[in-house]
Length: 254
Image (cartoon, rainbow, N blue to C red):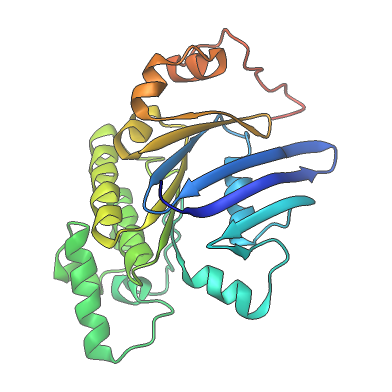
């Protein structure tokens, strides 16, 4: 068994009376691609933000390579952040920067080396060199996602986070992005954590899949085990059924 790369232990996070993470426990192993499934509002993004240190849980421990992320600051926070690359849900490119500057944002190397890095990363995500001089407004949604992925892998991070990577894309482009994620993760040997509600994407990119419901990981297993599970919550979710044990949010909760 590979070593644990990221570990969440009894993590709790609430916003006022609404409990989002409730004694949440999860281990993510080095080199694996783990997908977190869950309905909108289930706490997937909150979990990601807690690992990144953007949100502080009220209780629990989050270890990244043995470093405690909760309340980390200074050099420890920098150590953790430098390990991570992220593809945001909306790509989150800087509108005022061209593609090249977006990809190498935050990296410090000489200009020639940076441009070669840009071309290499564009090639990895299936884009040509001429895209480097374009601006985000010149790109389609799928191209923006590819550039966002190029930026995420530019520093060869040990950990990659993907936040709803196929949201807003048509099925064909979604499949393109899924295949790029698999190839890029494999190429740099990263540990990957993806949050999504897209079952098709999960099947494509996951080594293991976990389901988050009411603040807890209620099931975890391989893609093959997903198809065979008799867990009623997982079955309802993957079948997309409105009938089952999963409670639909009320108007007040949504």
